[in-house]
Amino acid sequence: MESLTADLLEKTMVVLSPVFGGRFDAIDVAVRLVDHGYSGRYVAVAPQIADPSMVLREVAAFAPGLSFDIVETGRGPHDTQPFPVQKGPIDKTA
Image (tube, rainbow, N blue to C red):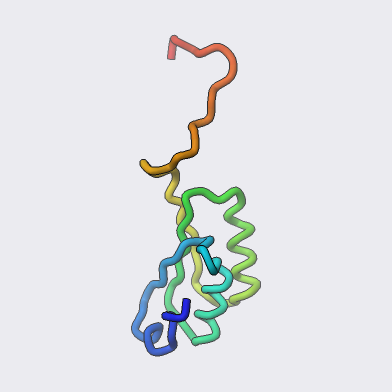
């Protein structure tokens, strides 16, 4: 996050980051952007979020006026989580 300087952001149209990073989250990035007077768009990416509207509200509360959105990418080919198992009989007519 230290690379988000006012000089760099002056030339930047879009900032892209994970919603949850190792040492920061979208709120941390949003606050830094607003503190530096950033006027572009900020997009946070995550495979899946349980309640995206909650994240949107929280970012808006900490960084009012920032153009912010979330993109959910879904499950990727390297996702190691097992697929949900269907319980009950399998419909073979479908």
